[in-house]
Length: 308
Length: 248
Image (cartoon, rainbow over all chains, first blue to last red; front, top):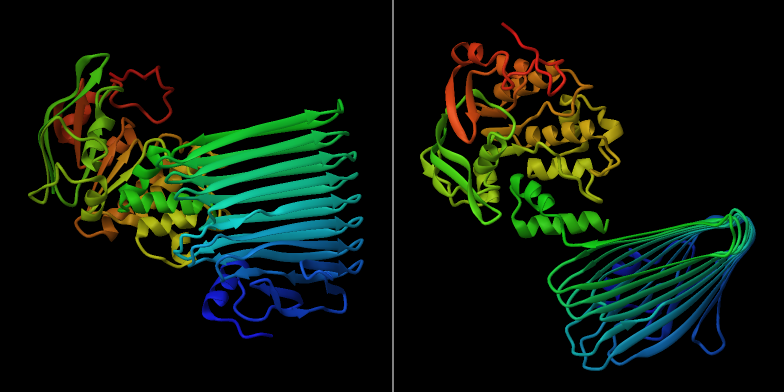
């Protein structure tokens, strides 16, 4: 594996908790090049011919294995679109860690748009974690526009954790999913924006199969002058259940728009949307102050807990 | 020792100045358990919130060991040794019971040590330590966790605003043991309780009666308690609210 510098290592720690080469299958992409890759007996990582992404094939019934595919950008001015396709065999049970860290100290924008497509076979289980992180004090923006598509066969399940806590100037996250009979999708999004950042999250989930279910929950904090939009649409096309929730804290001049979208196309579709946006409750701050925390420390604890 | 000197507290009510607390002076000596009682709406809770710094008096002074703390923030008062248990415990999202106890203690104590505080308020620690302090807990559970945080903070003066409210499944005797344990463990510490439950009045070293924002009586329980019996200021444990048992 190519030697990484300290900035690249720090970004890897932030987005994938990686302190060394991960176990199992992995591909580490740094400044538009693969700097380390390994397949295993059950998980094959194949680079696309154009160099812009990977095909990841996971054999049926592969159990308790992991795939790490973090991306780091530490040079200013890189713009890339990367396509990663995951084929998860029937009955497999795997853990996939993606994520992107950008350090931009220059004056040109750096942008990584990762398009991830998941084809999840019958009865397979996927746990997916994606963290986004930005650092660097250059004038160039740090931009991430992830696109996620999830195609779920019968009785498969997918749990996705999407986290963006710091430093990304502009992001549009688009997630689409199609669920067959008995498939189960759980999405947990945690987002914090600050400065003049913009973050847009768009979800569109088609519940096509009987007994399918989706639970999409976003917890977010908008500080300073940042703006967020949460646009979650569930389409109940069969006897299914769906729930979306947007729970947000606004601070300073932060702004949040929550757009609920429920479309029931079957009389047995049960769909629920919840949204709550507001500042930190005053009594929460007062309680922590009576324990000896300053107002600022209290706010930090409340936000840390909220986004935990 | 905490002293309130000529404390008044006014609020603006529909454009009119309304007096909630009127010229109250009192002393809470070290190593004492004091209970403030009186009818509902008489200003008891406001007095407790004025002591914790949640409300600021319109006039008068509050002294802690002779130091004027009237203008100090809630945080500064907490650091100087004032603890406060809310009547209505605050709910959070994401903050766990363990987090709250560690914040109260002011250090990252071990899970075992944190569990001791839950055990002291009659909660099976293993079942609660990882729970979020949110609406999934019952009112009684939240109340006991609230008391556990004040226990963990170990203040020189701990103020409890109606600690018995909502803990009906847990016996009064246990609550009283908590107070007694605090007095034993924290040298010279005082406890101030807002309550009109007879059994809590019975364990007080001194009782203060507040009505219509004014201090109308204070003294030892032997002096004050007989005059209260049969009024709403002293309600026996099993009495339904609104139907006080009249004793003669």
